[in-house]
Length: 208
Length: 208
DNA sequence: AAATCCAGAGAACAGTTGTTAACTGGATGA
DNA sequence: TCATCCAGTTAACAACTGTTCTCTGGATTT
Image 1: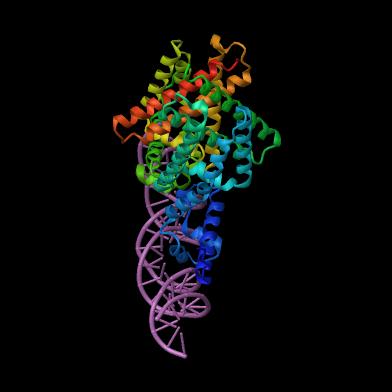
Image 2: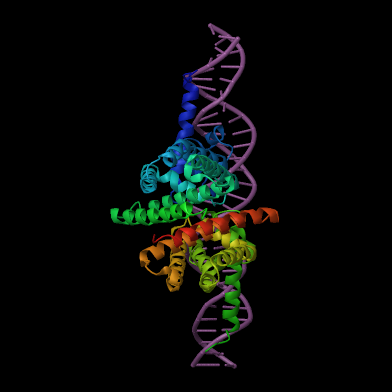
């Protein structure tokens, strides 16, 4: 059912993506609520009015960026939580995955961390919804584990939120250390690992 | 050694505080990096140029706001962690304290949550430093507890950071629910309580 | 081949912004 | 009392903003 786009639609998507990319770049030094429409079009090299062919407003573009930054992350989350080795290995793998993702997509990570509590309501809501989906997916994966016997759905979800928030905090720390030494990153990884381990221990003794 | 300020200095401080208050109010609907100097002075009712008598820039004002929002919180943190009742009671008291603080100073809490990862570097750094101080103080309090026997300083600090981050997340959730029903806030309190309890359990079994 | 569509350009709009310089007038200290 | 100080004012600046309307020319459809 795949349909090759006409040259017009293809060109449109190209411009749209250029706008998203330019915005993401400009957002490394400011927040979405101060990003100007003209600023973005100038960076791309199109007329300011062209912006309206793709987005109703900057807030609208922000929501699209949320989808771009988090939408493709769901399968990754699932498989990470699923990996059924020892608890310590799973934690190590998760931390590695976070560090790798921050290395590969620093601007996306920065955008999410910044705008999660940022000044644009619709974007905050979009991020909140995506993170809630993550938590639900993590919770569903946790439920499959035999270690989840006796856990209420409510408690599984509360643990899943704890994991998701912890991942975001860790990602944000890795981000700050992007220009730092490898040693800095190693320390962050070690602290994050131990925090995850402590949570994991709490999980194991939850039903005592 | 208290010296009553001259009327000139008193008036100056009054204007300065008015600028801070107005900025905090305006920041409920936007981020610091989009806050305009003229916007602030207009809200106060003074000339734009008067701003420079008090702050070098909006970023500078932001740093002052960080001090105002977090500076007075250190003693409160200390006494909360110290309270040496049962673990569950301590947790309940901490959650109550957070909820109360959010109710009393919603704009300050919002500012910190928003600008912690916001678009202004000097403000991010100021918040990071204050939170690091919190973590160190919490860590020092934890060390006094006999439950901390056998813990390395490193691990105490990692636990303290976990607590501090968890408090901020909880505060941010209470903030979102400020216009919600009492039921909403009750659910948040319950989830936060259980997360704290899980961490507390992990702490008790850390040395196993 | 002709008619339609539509992404992007261009020009103009009223408002806004940060920053400068020179000033005023009441509080301050000699 | 008189000279100094300095928080706040006034006016002006070039530069920027979001949004509107009109137009163009190549892709698309008939």
